[in-house]
Image (cartoon, rainbow, N blue to C red; front, side, top):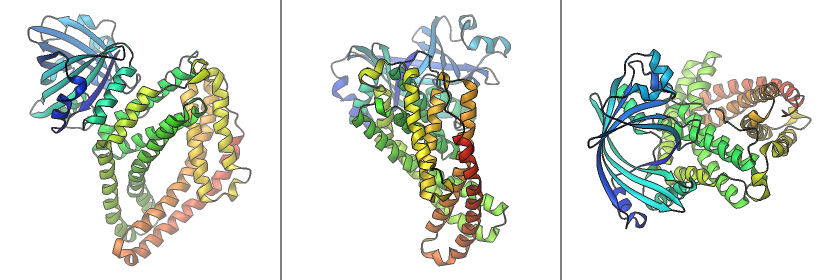
Length: 491
């Protein structure tokens, strides 16, 4: 299992990094490395999250197979490595790896792209761990396309993984650089195909039945961090689904903190929650404009709102959407996101006596606390709730839903499925209501000096949204009572 934190280094960061006190008085090694990545013509390996390469160091050749880290966290990947005699892969060595079955049925391998880098390596001893700090400068060549490489990799060789995160956080605090969400292989495939990396959904978290609270919290947080970082490349290109998935990941991180709050150190939890809330606002604004432009205006037109009215809103709305996405891109380049990711990756553990308590023993009280909050928000007369109260119910219910999904491996599958079905049905109606409310609020922001000119168009859209709200409210009471009738899952 390889644990590695990667940073992209802008040109202005070079001098700051090289002169950093941590990297002084340490032996420096220089190496020229040429690495060829292989796959089948159909891309059978990359489709399964696998990358196969042969790297040349002078006269030596090393073959490496890597599996992406979606199941292992944001910074961990499975890795297999062998010395080989030539620059071509030895398929016999892949026996027993995830690549073996794929290649036994696939066409012959072919080179896909090449990286050519000058690597500067320092080996550090910190906090009882051995960490390799490597700066790579060079390029990726994929057919006619090429891209510059300038990045820092911090790889744990042995010892406590937290030492890597602490070193990364310290360097990040002093040197202007951003986390690298794309590996060299990801970037090579993007160059080769001309397609940006697509958004990905969260994968399930594996929780052993005997996991302690501390182990479970760390597994859950690392899994969501992997989801967050995996969608950064897509979001950076303005991809609406990439932004949405990053927003979902931010919400799921907040849900994990809320679930384990009674077992977490309060000051650290409060800081992380506040930082995630700030990030959530920026991503949420972009998501709201995406929904407005790509869903609400389309739906309003399909349900009879005059195209001529909606066309008056589309131009100003798209301008707002582009501006919101620009703020997302800017935020991803600022220190806050990197600081949150590194901090959570390193922190990740309840303290005190609960640290060693089996999660199965703690889970009922953790989840019932969230359910109680949901039931209190909805009350016995949900049809009388104001829009603000229903919005608060929706947020509480989302946290409960995510928490049940986190803990699903501990519960009976049928009970989880039944409970989540009720959650999602109610959330759908609450979401429809919220989208209608947000649609009117966003429409009222449009126009600038043309507010009077756009007033009839806003009025037409508001009339459609009000009808949508009424329809959602009619279903909310029924779905609320159905949700309340289903007990929490048990194990």
